[in-house]
Amino acid sequence: MFAYIEGRVTEKYADAMVVEAGGVGFLVSATPQTISSVSGSGARCRVYTKVVAKKDDVWEIYGFATREEREMFEKLTSVSGVGPKMALGVLSALPVRDLALAIVAGDAKALKAAPGIGAKTAQRLLLELRDKVSDEELVGDFAAGGAAAAVVEGSAAQDALAALMALGYTQAEAATALSRVKDPGASAEELIRQALRAMAQG
Image 1 (cartoon, rainbow, N blue to C red):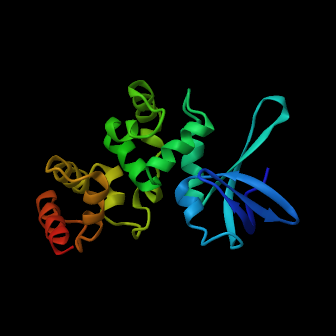
Image 2: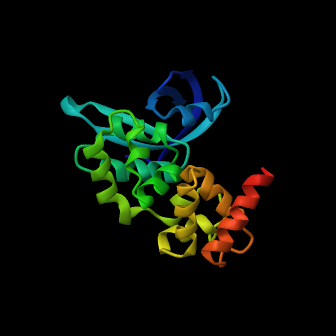
């Protein structure tokens, strides 16, 4: 219906906010991260939106801080049994990059940390979304072409990521460290050494 709403935030709640645009106050459901990204009541913002039709001609607006977050929401809701509320809960528990890494790595445990996601739903998400995760979602804030992006290509970076996770690091910690490696084309062993050095330096 519309791509985004840009206006002044007049009210903020735990899972929604009111954005006034053109004299109309739109109630926008959003993740805590998106809501907290707005400095305070009265601040102007732009939220990328997805309008979902419900029964009895009721429409709900879901808002996202980035296009990537909205695209991941749309992918989540394309999975059988995953509605907009559940998808928003997943994004509230896992930022887009962490969620993308969990899907690519087949980490059902990370998905089950989200509210309402049981073992069967987690496996369904992994099965249906594994091939739909984009490089941009994996990279997140990192520069394109970095180690995190290489994960989808089955390269040395993927082996390094798996090895770091086997050492007890989370996916987010391992991917962040790999993104700091100056030579992303190195072997898995060298990537691991450099990533561990980067984490030791803080």
